[in-house]
Image (cartoon, rainbow, N blue to C red; front, side, top):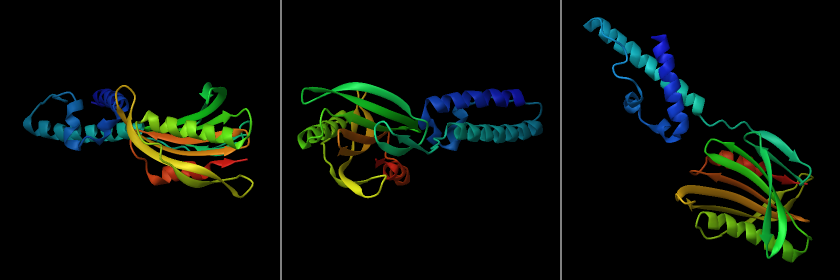
Length: 227
């Protein structure tokens, strides 16, 4: 029996981790994932007892499998001294860099990204050729339009104050857009804050399959501070 239960546990965990939406399947449909019959019958009484044991074991296995796949937000503070900000990520971030064209001028954009649950948390930093108001505005518009265009939404944003690590605040933009992304038109919700400071323009963003609990959104954005 133990070997059978462990085998079922591995199977369910694989299925649930590959298809997260299955985690919302009602308990009465759990049997879809289990071999039938689970145990051989020796007698009607023994059969009923074993059926109860099998059901209990299956329920336990299903619960363990779900807990193994549950999104974990392991928040940690990351200080990016090179690009001048600090932020809390829900997992260990990776780093990347890419070339972008803004107003016909090539620029570099550094990215830090971390994935937790069904969401990606990212901070992008565009290195500007100068710190003029016109260059900053062009970069902010480039980022705002790009985020909205990726989900087929209007690039609507409102003013927000971005905290500074040394105290005080600086003006920025905040937006939340939803729509269909990619060739498969998958639903995405984007939360973002955009801000310019000196020769950097920043994009702190969350891209999720569905709207996130507000406390997770607040944790990320409230921790985003500029040097």
